[in-house]
Structures are given as structure tokens and as C-alpha cells.
Image 1 (cartoon, one colour):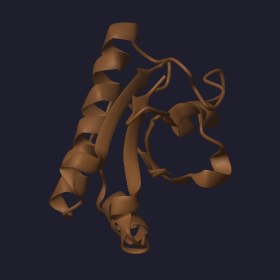
Image 2: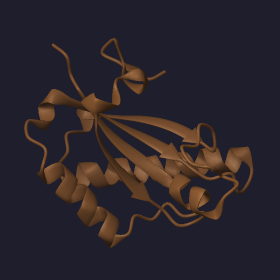
Image 3: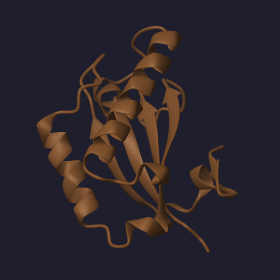
Image 4: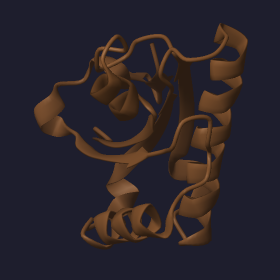
Length: 129
């Protein structure tokens, strides 16, 4: 569970969330220029960003050891965090949660599923006052 300001963000209703995924090559934590542009465009479209908490969740496929995938997940989310700070997203709004190969959204037994699990999700949760 990821709780920020007393709110359980991972169990929030999906319709309340704004989400952007950043995809990576196998074993990589490099953010491509295309992905950077997509992230910048995503944030340019957000009004009143201060009304959101940003949770960055790192994921991997199941290729490699559990320890390696935990490390890779952390590196991916940290790179996305660094990029957000570079494009002037306030650091205090950003929270990290790394899953490694745990909790895959897609089937790691399929090639396309593994490709889709090599990602970081940027999820904006509205702050409830």
C-alpha cells in the first residue's frame, strides 16, 4: 500500500486517476527522447498540478533475478523522477513505489506482455482537501 497524506493511492478508483506510462528496453533505464516528449506533453496538459500527488511506480518483466529486477525497477523510477524535476515538476509532489517483477499488469509468459511490463507508471492522484 502506498499512503501519502493518509490516502491509500494504490487502491483509488481508476476514474479519479491520470496516468502516463514510460516504456523501456530490456535491461535498460534510459528514457528515449520520444518518451521524454510524451511525458512533457502529458504534464503540459495538466491544470493545477499542485492539486495532485504524483506516484511513480517502477516495473520490470520477469527476465533476470528478483534482486536485479528490484534494482532495475528502482533505477527506472529514479530516472523518471529526475526527468520530472528537470522539467520543473515540484519534487515535493513526487513519490516513488517500486515493484520490480512483482504485480505485473501484463502476462510475462508472452513476449508482448514482457514488453509492456518494462515500464514506469506516472500516476496523478487528486489531493482531497
